[in-house]
Amino acid sequence: MQIGTDFPELIALLKQIEGYRGTGLTAKMFYEGKILEAVSLIMDRAKSNQEKKKKLHLTEQDQENLSAVAAYLDNHYAFSVPIERLCRISFMGQTKLKAAFKECFGCTLYDYILQKRIGQAQHLLMGTELSIAEIAQAVGYDRSESFAKQFQRVTGLLPREYRKLINKE
Image 1 (cartoon, rainbow, N blue to C red):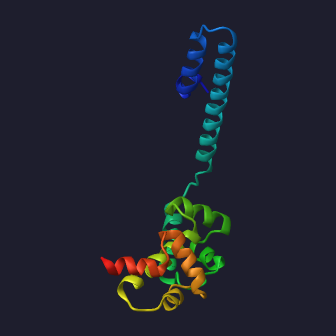
Image 2: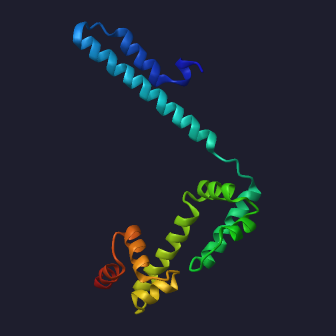
Image 3: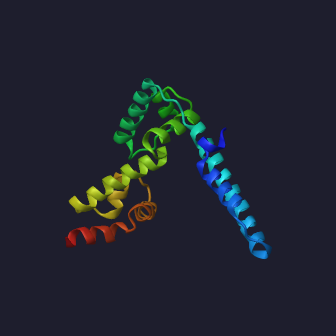
């Protein structure tokens, strides 16, 4: 790695250090601070490089298979979907499926299902008179308390608060 071209932040820091002419306690504090700043820059760069290496190479077929998984989840979000079934649909093992899905869709399988469930629940809260318990069951929750907790986590409101707010508008 050539520091001048690949790491301009560090070269700028080294030039600051080179140009500094302080002495005494002030100089000691300056140099200590710059050392910490250099370590921080190096750690950030290492982390960034590590994240780049983690990127999966997804073939066109992998992407099509992941789209098939998403379509399956779009139609079955209200049911318990075994990961093994998603592995069969995607022709991937669990580890690759989870990593590839997150890379492709920007969220985990669990979060994808959660967003689908909450989105449908919002639709039902707006457009129907179904009870909260009925909506919870319709979107895949056995217990309305679990549904309410997840709904609040995603939207910031309890389902009944959401319904009241929507009906006021």
